[in-house]
Length: 267
Image (cartoon, rainbow, N blue to C red; front, side):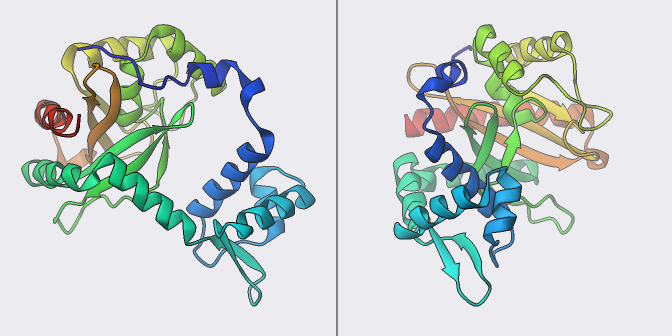
């Protein structure tokens, strides 16, 4: 089964003239605050992190403050995420119907005995975790909702790439500055990556072993909508030392089946 991502990002990559710089920078600031300490960050720390001059960062932060998208502590002289984002997130969850998805995450986690994740494409070249069900094992992989991962080195990202047209895959690789080694196992040639994508399309699931983090591997399956466009990905993350290749493929077939069940339930 082959599809293309609904709401393709190819236009975004190729038509930067449509990007509003202030909004682009505001999103970068929110992304940074999302990943950092809940205690918040100063204007100078934020400016350095997102490569903006302090005056620009200050103006953007105060615009976000006006709409409660960030909050400010006089005591700590620091900004952090605001409560209005919680409301937006909840509304987005309602639209996606994550409560229905959670049932399938629990099923996948129970059958694999691994942490399972439901993800969406984020921006041009990344994926973001929307929902999860962690394993009950003492020794397990923990993930944070809202976590952002690269598209070219993760099983989830490669699952998205496999069901995009080749032109868009090339645009994403070019947009990210080419394939780069993250670990010694990272695929860093276009030929090898495209071979992987062909296998993913053939199998209906993706496997990435130690390409982003040493000792960690992932298995992912696409969730298609009614038009056969890839919309989400269901994945599991596990420790390389705890699973065999046969088990990884077994997980892949299982996730493929459950991903299909999600598709027929929410679309």
